[in-house]
Image 1 (cartoon, helix red, strand yellow):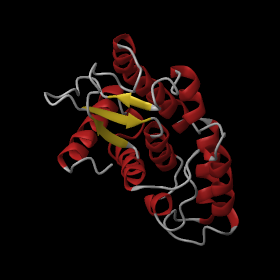
Image 2 (cartoon, rainbow, N blue to C red; image 1 turned 60 degrees about the vertical axis):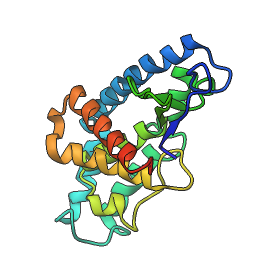
Image 3 (cartoon, one colour; image 1 turned 180 degrees about the horizontal axis):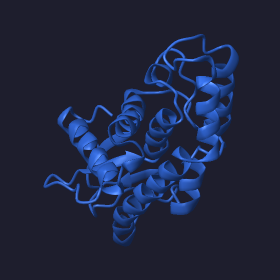
Length: 207
């Protein structure tokens, strides 16, 4: 589950046994994590690997046609898969786990300012950042949305089963690239994630 609203456990902590200082750290951890993934998105979308994927994908012509199991498209997806598979360079889950001691934080980031009068807080599972990166960099690499999201979609980085929240966060990454391209700012990324979470809250935490 990418998103959940969790009730206060008496002290307002993120996880059972966590301290108030850890809850505060959870707020700043989210801000640092989203800046980290923004930097990763900018670097990887304009890097040599993405360029190689684009070149291979377009080797056979129009990006929206052709058999993805053959030729340049197959080569492009092989490069892509090597990057996003579990433990690959673009699988950010182990990196985030190490950077933010995610086990201590229950593998969730608390959204800043999300504690409501009933004591619930909005928590984002740490794989959301790799999902958004997946969508954004996938589109920057020239892979069509239909391939990234459709039946041809390869496994998500470090993820087993894919739920609705995973797909929606991938879609957000794709939409951000399609709207802003390489000119996206960190503020635009942050706002987009915040708006997505608001939609999930309004829908009863469906993420």
